Length: 306
Image (cartoon, one colour):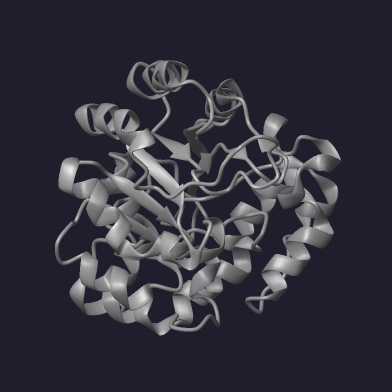
């Protein structure tokens, strides 16, 4: 079984037509090329059927689709994410999104509506990725402006997702795990998903995981040929096997390329199922045994296929 924890499919607001940079072939090619990969073929077609076929070809049984309200012309209405999960319940779960500059009362209402009282598994908060949004101020995740969000999410077990790598913030200290400590000093039970794996602070996040197991690291394509990438593998293999998840970051990464890389980059055989599906299922409270699975998965699971 494989659970991909980050797919932005060509569906409704995820594409936003030609203006959505992540679904622009040239943009996707540029980003994936920096890591030795290539853009997914379906980025050219903007076809959800093609995306689903690529999931099948890569052996991805189930995926989590996070919304975004921020830069790169990404502004996904939370109802679009709900619609995706209702139209394709066997393939997708979703994560809501809020815009950090919106009024706090409105953002808390969105979390209540779509996560606490609704079907979405968490909320995406892009505190730094707002550079091309007029009037918005890039901030670090430990800005006390966001404390009411963390308080509500901790109370109700809602996962908070950040794009958490150096380029996502005003300076490279943004993805330093010290900033997470500032949050967890006040919210020790908060669950956070760290998109792009805290890069380049690969070793620092490995050390931080000794102290806080509520953090899930999502290296996605930052595990491919980046400075320090081996640290993710070593950390998962020995010190922190329960704190890393697979993600293709489609459409910026080709799903088959990412799956093949994760299967062959050095994760130990008994650790690989944790990375590819078990940790994600545990973190998001998914019953993996009840998810519809493709035949012939490259990652063995413990379930009998009916």
